[in-house]
Image (cartoon, rainbow, N blue to C red; front, side):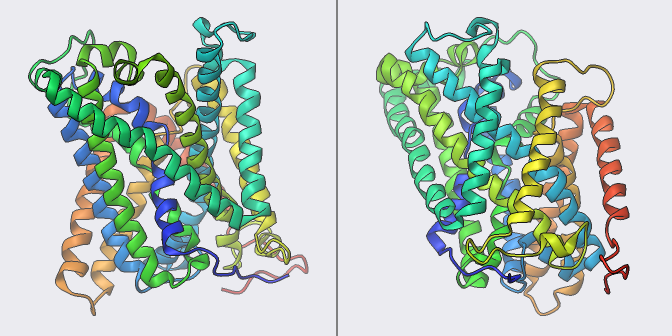
Length: 469
């Protein structure tokens, strides 16, 4: 067995990785949530989407500069190692492998299952569920849980057994998910302008019973989940052809596509339904108003496909997480997790580790956030709060780049990373204000994970000798 991946992905696939990983379910259901948090204020909602996109863009521009200089086995871990050393890189890699990748992945498996059932029950209202739809059967029912586990295992099998097929799946699902978003953006804006609906929504806020104290911060925080995941695309740098050239292009162009799609879709939805309808019934009502009940139901199928495409991209990161540490001879059982299967050219053992982490977090997510079996302390949203520490971990990298990148221009060395530092700090502040005390429980769990990672950083080899640094 070897320890290196082959160069199997091109620029178009890399762009689809960025776009496909980020655009999942968030854009479809966050429109309703953002309107609720902004008090039904459509212009403020658009500002929220733009700010969230600019935060992502600033960080991407900073990492794109690093991607042109550093290339090893896992983008952000490589950049951390080049700027701050192996110890910091290890801890970022550990967090990504055991916390960040798995939490987002298991959430997308659940969302894929949820919208599959929503589609099935919208087409066939008599479809039998052990928990009726009205009581949350599509959210927490056993059918949803079983289907979520099936999707999780299928995405694992695709990535672990056929990485090339996974790349093709990412391209196809990305194209599919852009169809309803593009249709709604174009048709919704044209219809909204012609009917006067857009002008009405821009000038007439909806009625919201519980308006949050800081609507802009809360709504920007909501966009964080919809914009998150792009950093996972950097994990394929060792498998990307001409990575130092193509990865920066993929990151920046993918980011611009995402921001444009999100903002235009949000405006298009406002053209298809009133603010009040969107708050009361969600974005589906806009599709139904413009395209009829049939397409309104089909939308749920598009959402399910979109979620599965994102799940596939997130699982890509999960499968490579333990490998990115082991190839540096760090972390538990490095000699096991750094091997590449000769037939599949994939880190199979690392993939299994990623799947196990996903399963563990899925159990926590179900018991604490979905079923409500666990209450009280240590209850937090694992789909949004890991983003808080991800941005916190970016900041030292950006600062170290400003210190070390002496051969770069002022723009690339100071201006871009300085903006990224401010943007990251803003996202941390917004997340803390939005989630309150839940952040404390999350940080306690985060610290425990980091201490465990420290203890496992340099385990003994099978012969009893420690790895050399």
